[in-house]
Image (cartoon, rainbow, N blue to C red; front, side, top):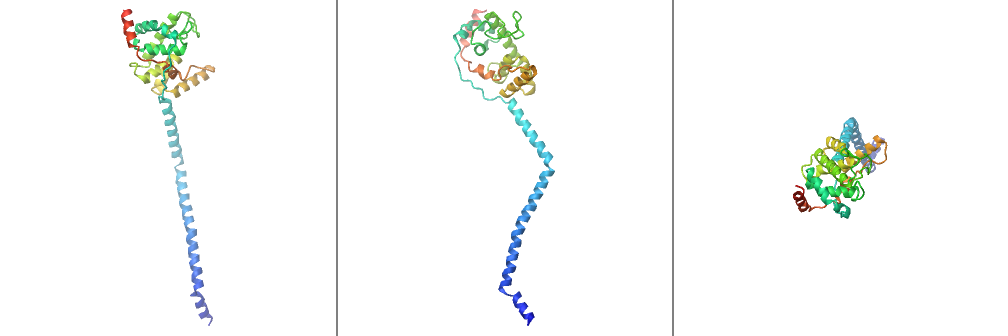
Length: 249
């Protein structure tokens, strides 16, 4: 009798329902456990490759930084007018540009003068501190003769163009290097060319910061000198140069 009762209980609908619920619950529990197991395995793999991943990240970071230092950032060349003082020196600028073989750069030289002094003072090219000044003290505004300042400044710029290997006035990358070298000194050109192959705003700033630290000074040159000069760069002086060539032969 008892045996039959147990058999009935075993085959009862209630018992079947309980068994079904237990099976469903085990499936629900099994899924997250399987997911957790897979996750732990993946984390273990990442951990084992951790050194390699860190190395890859460091390399990517280095490439990014190097790229910014060697990248010629966009240069704003929106024109601003030259002053009457700069334009008054156009004939003298052209004379010495022809003498030192850089006559096609007259508009750039005018832009340099505009940025340096606006054509005012006795040292309009701010050339006193460069090595080509052999007459006056090597201090800011040390030159007391505007014509001599122009000659020294043009001679210095011609040397910067040669050091930067500028091919012509349209060789922008090397021209930017030469312009920044006029402001910082020729050593910058060699430094930037050897390390990065060109000028960039980023490496110009790095050079300035390095020099400030080295010389223990608060200001070293103008890291944005190239852009500041080019805002005064005006085209269309070819006729003036040709006329000047005839006059100075």
